[in-house]
Length: 189
Image (cartoon, rainbow, N blue to C red; front, side):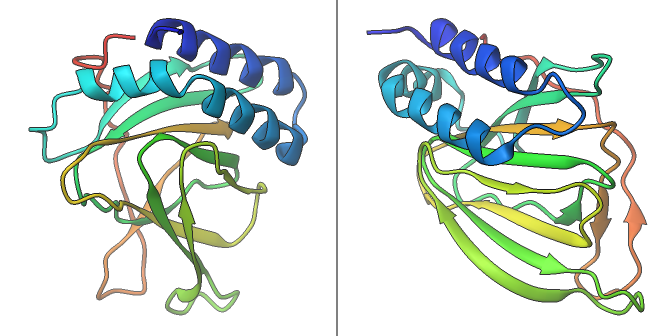
């Protein structure tokens, strides 16, 4: 049985091995990460048990930032039933994979004329399931922890320097969200 530190090291190693070039094969990366998540379920469950569920906002821990390739590797602990704002990640490619718990991902498309975002689909992801997007897609999304009681953990990979745009529900025009400091607190990885 692996502990959570070993589990995170394995996931980080896989991500770094696949993300050496400008644009990795996201399907292969998702398959390998998914396999590792399933085989390290005990260690990742132990990590989820250590995360304090009292926070009203997600806890974010950088596992890798600022490399020459611009790879960002983030571990996010989602409070019960928490939903992110509708957002995109600029001109980056990205991959999101739950490690523990389940996420709902609503996808939206930004029309070329700059009008209001249009709903595209809804995806439910459990541990080891991945969703990815290519760079420069006019695509936005919103993530939500499906549990009303438990914290969910997810791993997010972004290639390039992400610039997140958030969209107010009643406005078509985006507003820039200032970069936030990454929280390394209670995740203890």
